[in-house]
Length: 436
Ligand code: S3P
Image 1 (tube, rainbow, N blue to C red):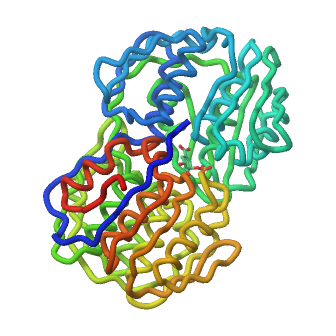
Image 2: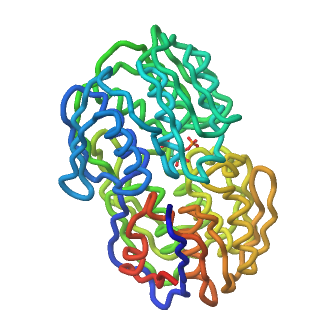
Image 3: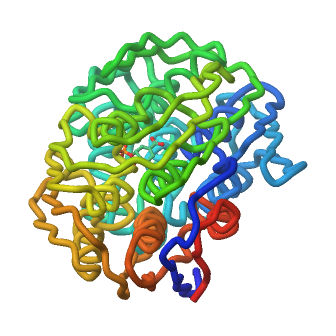
């Protein structure tokens, strides 16, 4: 698949300055394609993330007979075929590296009249699918996994029924899979979660005319409605912006404006945690766009101190821990992370990968089953491995900016899954990152 690419991140010789717009939100981009495909008529998606993960979703709907035009890199026009208009694919559907594609599509495909199979790359092939398959089986679906991991085989033509599902994991992907199957189920499908997770599926269904009742940690809908085609402007991905938020906070003299960032509170736990550590981040021009909260984020350098990361923030910053590990490594004092065992089943085991890399850079990190204790201090140079995890690679690039000597980062090609053009944008605002 991806040829191996290593990066070299050198200590910053200048502050981060100017403005930067991160690529479109990955979660919203996937859902925008999926819901537009099931809507009646064409929908235009602007600000679309043209990354490998979301391209996989586009390709998959193409295999099911949905025409999707790309008038520009960050734009897609999806010619929706209606709730029952998808066609049987002729081959397995390849989700690549994308857990979101695979989990959400498992739910959506469980309600179709045809059989399908979902496959993924080596990282995705290790990620848990039972958490999605179990509630779908309870709804009457036929979903087989390979001992709890991909590939996933789905038999169509099942009569689904709504369930009341209390999810044992706080996972927007699980919640969304069950809700998408619920579109095709008789009666009401309800999901409750141990902690509230991102609510894009609920919001975007509602915006397309499907009645959904939702509040923090709970969502409920009934089958048998229709989806209206709606144009959407996707905001910049907070999770991609996060690397620059941390970099600008850590590099002395920095003053960086991140534009048009999606600041849904279910995504911005990192802002709360960084501010509690001493960061100087101001929201500029907050507004609503396509039903989502959006703002500019002005980040100025500030010295950080370690904290105990409150457990209630974990779900709201689940993708930001690699960046937080680096912030904690450069902060004064100790940062303790607990209740974040989910990090072990992301694109890599992010606790193990970040701990190993930071230790190589001379940082004291004690791993625990559900988190870590990080003793902040000075980072040395060295060679670390991202283990093919896009967010770990970008986090280590930030580590290189604040280290005393260059950091070589192994296996960075997967950054294109969520942040195509990371190196160019990083260099444009003053970071010294390049392909090694
Ligand atoms: C996502 C949910 C999160 C997140 C992932 C995207 C989504 O996963 O880590 O990058 O779009 O629903 P979980 O919900 O499984 O924690």
